[in-house]
Amino acid sequence: MERWKTREVMVGSVGVGGDNPVRIQSMTTSDTRDVRATADQVMRLADAGCEIVRVTVQGKKEAESCEAIKEDLLARGYTIPLVADIHFYPPAAMLAAQYVDKIRINPGNFVDRRASFQVFEYDDAAYALELEKIEEQFAPLVQLCKRLKRAMRIGTNHGSLSDRIMNRYGDNPRGMCESAFEFARVCRKYDYHDFVFSMKSSNPVVMIEAYRLLVDEMKKMGWNYPLHLGVTEAGEGEDGRIKSAIGIGTLLHEGLGDTVRVSLTEDPWSEIDPCKRLVRWAEKQQVLPPIVLREKVALKEGLHPQGTVLLKGESLEELEGVLKLAQKKAKDTPDCVWVEEVSEEIEPVIKDLIEAGVGILSQTPYPKALPLSKEPLDIPYVLWMQEPTSLPEKRPEWIVFQPKGSFAAQTRALVSAVKESDLPIVLAASYSCEAEDLCIHAGAEIGACLIDKLVQGICLLGIAPVDQRRQLSFNLLQAARMRTSKTEYISCPGCGRTLFDLQEVSRRIRGKTAHLPGVKIAVMGCIVNGPGEMADADFGYVGSKTGKVDLYVGKECFEKNIDFADADERLIQLIKDHGKWKEPEYHET
Image (cartoon, rainbow, N blue to C red; front, side, top):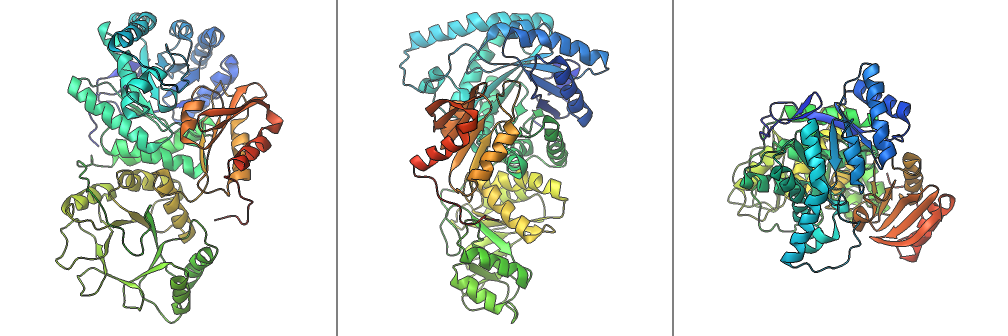
């Protein structure tokens, strides 16, 4: 793939941007003051294929530990670059820069106080004074990094924008970009250019929009700084991988991105395999053509207004499985089933499915089923297309598009060809890859179509079991913020700031709340991104100090310093108090 050509920035001995390959990054979860534990994690990451590792640096003790960590690594033959992660405390950056290869600063909290989400009015003169304050505190670090030849990442997080930025530009991708540009302009004023941008959010839609806007604005200004890609607080398991694949994969497919991190609430080295799979996939792709968007799309019979799941049923057993879900009114019941023909064996189940409200798409005529045809029909029908061509004169009800080439590229071409129509498109994508690749490839390819609303539904085909294809379809729609079928979780990957066993707490809360479709719960190890990222969640569980947890409703802290042992039940009570709780009846599969 031919990526957007950025300037090269050296992070230690590792080149980022320019002609270098996409680099893989991760972050330790150990206490940075524990030198041996942190060095061990860095080595394990390097052995797994990680190329750049970040460590959390809250204060001077952690910054001083970076020297010993670096020495320990070099003594054991590891030259992998280290990055110091700085929030709230600029002096730690000045000290850490003596020892590490790169400094990550968050423009939302390097100078500004933690956001209180209050409305403030700044006239131009007052705002200019705030910018002077940024330069006053940030310029010494810029000059130090320039002198020591250290790299820097100006890493905006959607969850930690300052009140000043949100009041002037908004709590949105524009605000994210402007927050970073304020710091970048200081770098450029001092002729320092060894920096990288990132625009992270737990919402892949916001993340993609922010990076696209960032690049558009950079091109206008003649800038070409490298991009580090990531979806923050993506979660764990398949959900975390799908969110990351949608966000990172869409941008890589557009030729954007020089380093990546798949942030998971798992052990750090678990992030490397999905990173590798994503980068390998991207290397085989062609850069996507420009997007053509349609003004409106009609809602048609058999389709769900928030995104349709079409399931191809191959056997009686598979159809009976769908019927059981439909009869239970499960949230993850397919909206429509595609069969080649309604044989005598499956006809009773087909009738029951129709009675239960599931649409039927059949390649052969059957009463109450919509015919699926590659040729125009004189009766209402669904057009089965495999090439991005114009529509026939006899218009179908909707389109099932099963492209032979790149799903995302071919879908963009189809939307361009039918842009004057309002016909819904269901993307049928077939995969024969191994299970570990499936959610990565589908997230990157189908997610790129869902994010921009190019398609109104999906039908996964291929060798994966039917239940896996069904569940993955719903997970893709949920990750793309189209349709909710289960509880949504926002959870950070953990770092040296984390105040409890994040993986265990996340598993425990999931086990108690997984039956609440439509509810979003954030589980955050510390306060760095907590309140901001929880603006996108209904409820939040945030480590506040050792053994204590704060509970949030939206961005408002409802209960402070709850004992860790009581926090789960207090969270459940909070959900009940706000009318979002229901007792579990059955476990949806």
